[in-house]
Length: 166
Image (tube, rainbow, N blue to C red; front, side, top):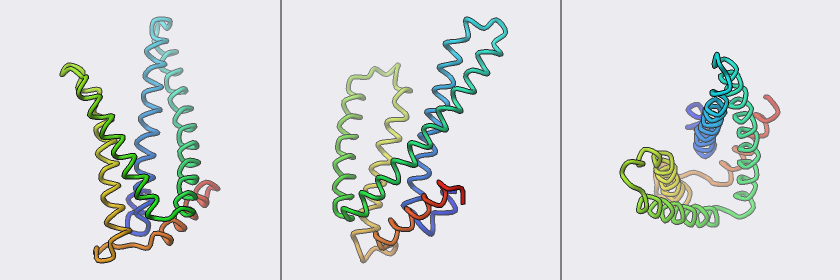
């Protein structure tokens, strides 16, 4: 869906792709943790596997519903405040993410470096989104300059249609 929306509304494509990755991570980690907790109590391991799958799917559905609600609220906020406030919020969030990532990497030993892949990718994605947003919506000379209001309205309409199953 995100690849199909990339040309028409890139803002929605970015939000959908990030949401998909986040929801899949939450569902997978929940299912894995439930499976690991119930594994000692399940002699055949079938019960732990089924419980892990059910818990992972339930969390995946709940996370997706919550993410769509947050995206709708975020798009409403973007519509109400404008592109300059959204860029300021993205810049502040990127600065906090970089500071947090730096602090986390500073206190981390090299043996636990694999656990920082998701925060590094999330921070890099947030920085790329901030740079893209600034170029696409605030620089009219940029070849891919877009109208912020049109994109936000299109994104809101797309989310409303998809939330109702259209």
